[in-house]
Structure formats: structure tokens, C-alpha cells
Length: 484
Ligand code: KG4
Ligand code: ZN
Image (tube, rainbow, N blue to C red):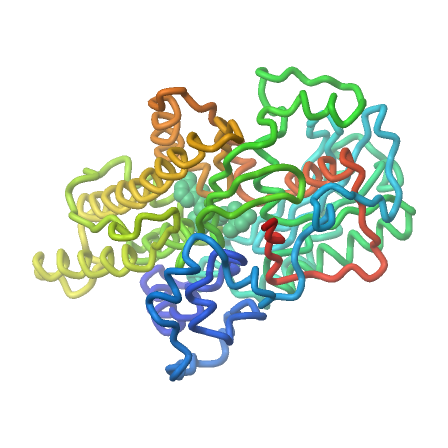
């Protein structure tokens, strides 16, 4: 194990790549995608043996300010056919679902094995159709990636390969089942994510579905995060333990369509109108970094543990600091839309941190006192959440003036585990003239795990949608299909 400061040096060397080591966003990266055609198809990877090459500046490919403005918040690059594979299980109309590999009997409770390997966690779980988690297993790779300060795809893939069988077997055993033959269907994340990692889970699920002749569901990772907010995970919606029609299932969900989702994870930062399974309208997305990335980079800067994401470490340290101690700019003050940006805040945090270190006469930010680091963490978190609050309020104003009647917010993705974020967003929901209800999965179900793949597959099965396992591909980029 090398020291944190050594990891920090390594991080600096490969920073350009490592910052993108969590998979990049699909739809919201419009501006960067326009400027950088090279990013259109491939996920960026970290090669630890090869030094980074300097990116050549593109000439003559810049859009005018006016042209950009035309697209902001409305149409993203993906809507213009830049990526060929879009997620649309229900066809263009969003409704014509097809059970391509059959369906379990949905009038009784059924069970689904879910597999997730899109990034740095190998997860599997067996869920019953009423939302009961029967058995779970999760192999975290945080220790493997810790020393590199980010996720190294090659190492992640190998770790997935090593763990996939034991994780699946453990989930099955913990569910009290003898073998995969005892589940009623299989679901697996097929994108977006790191392609070589996704393939490990996808191949395993395909094999199992074909061997045991089970209905198969290819799960969209972002939809799976969103749908976790609908899992009846608390007493509010007692477990119903029966099957039934689509309407019966829908009535038991903790949040029902349509609702607004705020997805904040390592790869994404989006506000979405959720209209139904496979039917999502993007209201705002990040033009550069995601909120999770900003947390991870701040953790790295402050020399905190980053394996498995630096967010929890920043949150913990922030509790000891003063959120107003370090002045930082709230992003995108001049843009009155619902998009996000965290790249500027990241730079501001770094510059302020270096300035404080210089003022203290220190050679390196590593030598800052615990108090200084806590103040930086707390101030960063405060401003990062302020940006979310502003964009969310604007979106709520907009939706409250629409006919759709949306008054429910689902906060999902890894960063939704952050208690300060939850508390402040809850306060916003309560402060509205007509208060909104807010659903957030329990913290451990906000970050990546197997239950999300199983639950998303259950939701797809309930509406009668399954896929063919034989040639199922995986997709680094997997944008939601535009509904307009
Ligand atoms: O959803 P997730 O597990 O993976 C992706 O789909 O990206 O999200 C991981 C992200 C990481 O950036 C991690 O630092 C962040 O979620 N995260 C948090 C917290 N827990 C995880 N960020 C802030 N506070 C937390 N408590
Ligand atoms: Zn995720």
C-alpha cells in the first residue's frame, strides 16, 4: 500500500484521465460533447502504464455562443443521433412493451436475480416482486483502487471476473434458494458504464438466463437508480406480498409516475421528469463534472480516502468544519436554466486550498491542519449543495406551472446518501406553497449494488418488457431516448 501523498502525486500525473475514471455522463454532457467529438463514443479509461498524452486543441469546431444557447437545457447532443444506441424499452411511444424472452407469472409474487458490474462494485441480489430483498452480496473494490486515487478499468474488470461467481452464489444462498434455477427471471445492468466491466456481469447473466431458460431483462443503470426510489423499502408502504395487475403494483410504489428525479452520482448530475418505465425527459444535466466527481476530487485534494468514492469522507470531515469559512463561488449564476457545472467549483476549491497553505507558510496542502481541511470540506459541500438547491427550485417553479401535477421528488444515485443534501432538499420540499413529497432510498441503496438491477428488472417485467439474452450487448453510453 502506498501512502496517500504518493497516491496524490500519482493522481496529479494522471489527473486528466483519472478525473474521468468514473464513467462519463450520457445525455447531459452536451457542451463538452460538442466541443470534443472524440468523446462521442468511448468511455475514457485510465492506463496506469502509459503517461498521459497532451490533448490537441481542436480548431474550427467551436459553436457560436448563440448556437450553444439554442441547445442549452433543451436538446442534447445525444438527441441528434450522435450515439446510435438509445434506451427505449417501450418503443417510440413509450408504451408498446414486448416480452421478448417471456414473462414470469405476474399474478403471484415472483423473484428476480439482479447483477450489477458497471463500475467498481460487483453486486448481486434476489428480490421478490413486492420489493422484499431476499438475499444480497456485494464485493467492493475500494481497496484495489485506493492507491490510484480513481478507478483503473483493467483492475476493475479483473476484480469483477474474480468475484462474479461467488457474489451470485452468495446472493442465491442468502435468499434461501438452491440455485439460479429457483428464480423466476434475471436482470443485469448493460449500460451506461465501463464497457469491460459491464461485459463481465452481462455475460454471466446471459449464460444463466440461457442455461436455465429464464426471462432476461437488460437494465439501464440510471433507470435502476431512479426506480430505487419506488422500492417499498419502509413501513409507509407495507409489503403487499401478492402479485397482481400493473395497477396493483403501481399503487404500492413509494413514489408513483409522474415525478421529478434528481440523479446525483459519480457519473451523472441530472434533473429528469419521469413519466413511466423507459420514459424520461431531461430537464437539466451537467455541462462538465458531476456532483459525485466534485466530491471525489475534493477528497483527493484533501488527502482523504477515495477508494469507492470520496464523498463519505468529505461528508464526515465537513461535519467538523465551518461551511462559511472559505468563500467559494456558486456555479452558473448567470445562466438561468436547470443545468449544472462543477468544474469551476473544483478549480476554486483547489486554488483556495493552495492559497491557505501558502498563507500558513506550508509547502504542500497535505500539511494543512485538520481544522483548515474541515473548513474547506464544509465550505465545498455547502456551495455544491447550494447549486443543487438553486437548480431544483427553478425546476420546481417550472413544473408547478405545468399541468402535469408533479409534486414528488426522488433523490437518487450515490450522492443521495449524503445526509446534509437530504436534509436541505427535504427543507425545500416542505417550504413550497404546496409542499412536495420527497423519496430517497436508504443510504446503502443509493450507491451501486445488486438490488437496483433486480428491482429495475421487476419494474420492467411488471409492464411486460423483457429482452433476448443471446446477443445482448453492453453500452458505455446509453442515453435515454428523447421523447420529443
Ligand atoms: O451511484 P454511485 O454508487 O456510482 C455511480 O453510478 O456513479 O455513486 C458514486 C458516487 C461517488 O462519487 C461517491 O463519492 C458519491 O457517490 N457518494 C457520496 C456519498 N456517498 C457516495 N457523495 C457525497 N456524500 C456521500 N455520503
Ligand atoms: Zn451508479
